[in-house]
Length: 141
Image 1 (tube, rainbow, N blue to C red):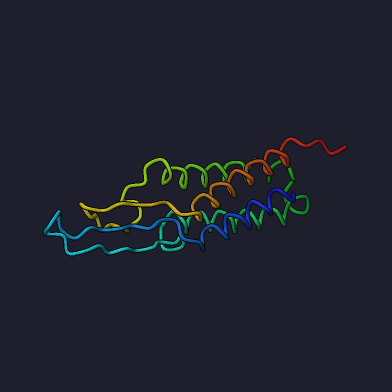
Image 2 (image 1 turned 90 degrees about the vertical axis):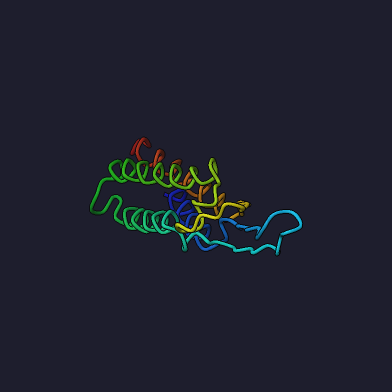
């Protein structure tokens, strides 16, 4: 169960850290009027809120494990939850376009640089997956 709670903590910490920095170039070449830069945290995006919500549900399941719900069932539910976090946040890493980080404001001349919070959230999802696998398949000897 320790891996589950470590994964949850990493996901929550990652959500509150910066996920990306978007730089928008105003104009081209000699007509450029400068750049505007905006940092985006996980809790500002739908993906981050979904990840945090999944982490909270996973924490509740972890506390109920062995008391109300069997550890094996909790393990399988956490496996599904962690895969959702990995897919949702991993998609942002694989396709870091401006439209993913600007909540609908698409900027033609923009550059997105990914930040540590997004990676920590995905690592937390992976640790959560490992915890779910351990809970689901560990024998009760």
